[in-house]
Image (cartoon, rainbow, N blue to C red; front, side):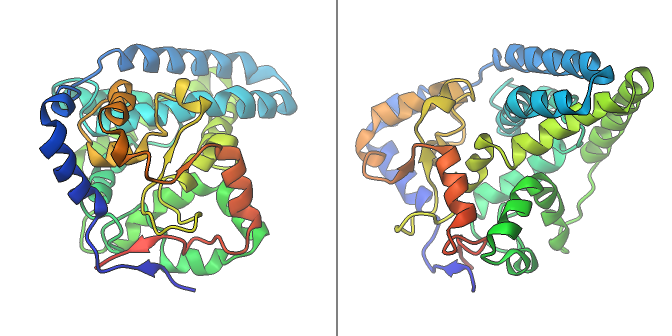
Length: 310
């Protein structure tokens, strides 16, 4: 097995040029920032910390249940907000977006906001380039998982851990930056304080919420939906158009996002309405859960089901 290779450039480049040639004024009017995102992030963080304190002395079963049903959704939303801040779509100033992203890590346990910011820009600028795109799994990871449904199930559960380790293969690019260190220190202090005041079960709830939100959960299908070749086409990027977008801040509009990275989440549906002919002709997903189940059970779907380029 091997990745599907292409000599063609990222197809979003040409799409963007064509759309701007037709609808430049309408599309550029969607650019900007959405500072209301901060209010949603504050609410999600407050709810998660409150729930973690409430569940600190409860049974493991209740912690497991709440983290899967509610916690995973809230922590997934916090990752969406980090994604928005990565593209400077929350505040005008880069500094404010960085601080906001680190704050969003509060309930996530893992200090990943600044590392995500660093490598996510590479994903957009070098999509499919093996030694630059951290959204691609490593050759070793893909080979180890293979097409085994059981191994894909385990991989899905630990997807967040897998994504965190991928940048380590980029030997020519130093991982640590000052901001990554600041992010790490903040998260260690916050997590230690919560553990000291309320005990280990408080941290367990938040940890499980993150693992479920990034992996073996209906929302976990999002990570498969965005770029895996699960359909007959060799389309590199897929959008999701379904009810989850309404409370997951339009994260499903992924093709639209790759076409125009400087459009905040609230305006992405408007982009599709402005240039429908560029989106209606593309394949898309309508169910994250169905996709996740099919990815795990269908032998044709593997971690190699991605497009790579030089």
